[in-house]
Length: 155
Image 1 (spheres, rainbow, N blue to C red):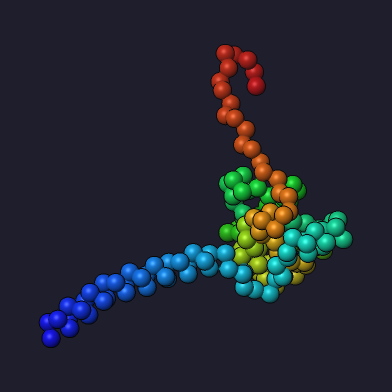
Image 2: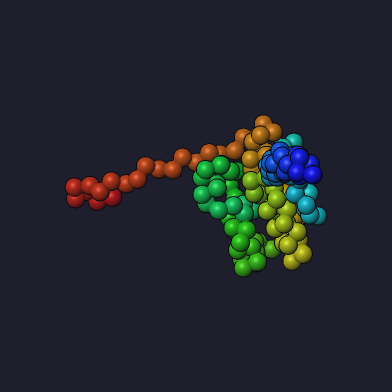
C-alpha cells in the first residue's frame, strides 16, 4: 500500500511539471494565432494589391507610439490608439476607405469590426510585423538623440 502510494506520488511529480510545460508551450505557440472577427486579414500580397488599387486608402494604425518606434510601421498613417477607438473614431474622414493596422492584426480586426458597425468602410486589416515577416518593407524610425543643453545658443 505504501509502495503504491509512493509510486503514485513519484509519477505525479513527473507528470504534473510535464503537463504544465506542455500548456506553456501551447500558450506561446498561440500568441500570434489568427485574429478572430469579420474584418479580413490581408496577406502581404493582398495588402500590396489593395493599396495599389486604392491610392486614397487610409491606414489607421492602432498601436501605441512606442510600438511604432520599436517595431516600425508604414510611412503614412492616421493614428488612433486601440484603447481610444470608441472615443475618436468620428475623426476618420467620412467616406474614407480604411485598412486597420496593428502588430499581428488582432487589434486591427477588433477595431475594424467595431468601426464597420459604426459605418466606416473597412477594406481589411494588416499586421505590420506580419507584413514585414512576409517580405514587405516597413519604416523603422530611429529615435533622435536627446538634446543637450547648450552654452546659451538658441535651439
